[in-house]
Image (cartoon, rainbow, N blue to C red; front, top):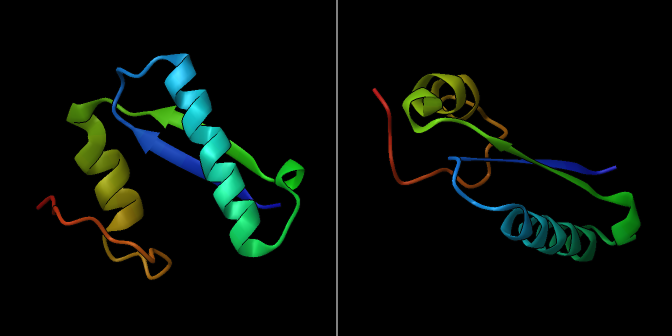
Amino acid sequence: MPHVVVKLWPGRNDEIKKNLAERVAQTVADNLGVDVGDVSVAVEEVEKRDWGEKVYKAEIKDNPNIYRKPDYEYK
């Protein structure tokens, strides 16, 4: 606890994804007052062509648990 999932388009190498995961984990730990060893971070790639259906419409749009909404919208 806690677990964070970052979804993004393909194209970043493992080093970039690992650095992102480490920074996200540290930020989460600092803000929640937990040990960084208790935080897990997954990075999932989603093809650009699938983003609207698989991520935006399925997980972002109309989701009351999103505390930071994007500035874009898929119709």
